[in-house]
Figure 1 (cartoon, rainbow, N blue to C red):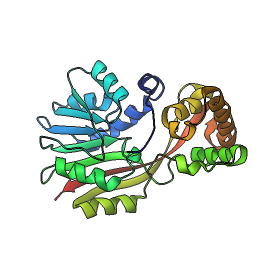
Figure 2: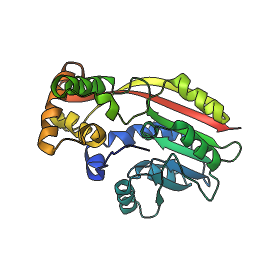
Figure 3: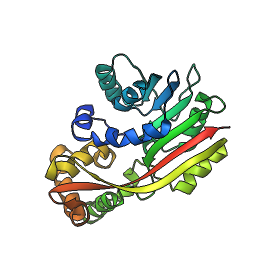
Figure 4: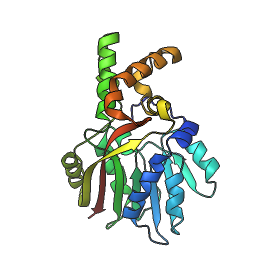
Length: 255
């Protein structure tokens, strides 16, 4: 994981709670069974790990961000949370399922991730995940690219930290690893951002740090305003910003 993203756990919980809310649908697909052991890969501040634990299962939450794990431990001290790299982790037990929500698109070496997931599962174990797919936040990315090119003479694409595959690409990677894909869908989910006019700025602050590492706070605010001006016609409606999310949701079984 090469991202320089700095996670702001308080802002994540306060303004971006929709991530966990939408993730509850992925928990339903996971369908946890009492007594199972489940790994939550990219657990963030732990909300969905707690949701899964409510089914009577044993959960371990794993995330690369120290800040996120510290917040998760503070919120849910009864759950085991560990700091690990999703592209290079090992476990000392076998899990009935590996679950992941809104995290895999930060892991730009998917083959490594899937190998680690494979090794964490027994035969018949399942992998259930949702993450950004091809075209995710395309309008936001396009707006950033245009501002960088027009006003700063920079190619913003070199700072892009995300991996947004097509459904065919990702299904093929799963099958190459040995998984049997039993469910896969790529869908649009325009998502309302909280805090009205400031919603897009909060989103950029929370998720797009990689683009702005060379700018101080005052410069960032100027860029954010320019990006918002570019994106407004498509993404601002009735006093709120909507992120143009496109998600992939999959379930695969280790054969």
